[in-house]
Length: 248
Image 1 (tube, rainbow, N blue to C red):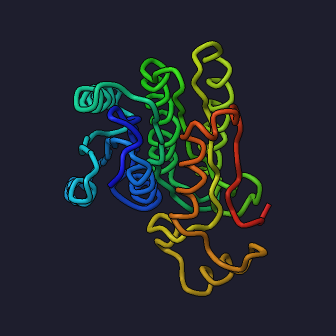
Image 2 (cartoon, rainbow, N blue to C red):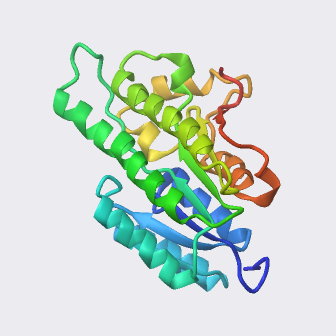
């Protein structure tokens, strides 16, 4: 696996053991990044991905922890910096979703979504803001449902609205640091998070929405993420970018 120099850029991908996160890890590794593969519950999947990358000649390390736990995340960031000498890119894909009409949603589910998606983003962004080197990038994850306003997504969309707001504020707070902060907002994407609990009719209906008439793939999302993380994408800053095949 090629590297761009003797001291390649270093990335940490939260939620890197599955779904979009795994595709991002693979994409950054192909670009020569040393990658911290973060996991919350699936250590085996993270270690398997690390093994895949190292077997191809790349560099990677698995780091665990609850994204909403500031001590666990500080330790994860410490581990990546200790392994690779610094940090240039943080991609925060970790998140959860609970679907239910607002009138019916259990408040425990609401609290769980906001603990992971809002507090978790704040904790990860705080660590990134303190550590990213000049020329670096932070990429958060929102959702294109922000524009679709689909029923049953209230708690999830509310949490991602907070993510978009944090992204825009942090981009401006990091003035003078030469660090970009952006959010990617995928549309319907064939990941376990999206497919879980949906029947085939629902999946087919959502896949037909984009003018391109298919679901996105994790690799589609990883391409945009890799661009934003790279020097080539460094003039893009303080943006929420919908990556959805043209739905909204």
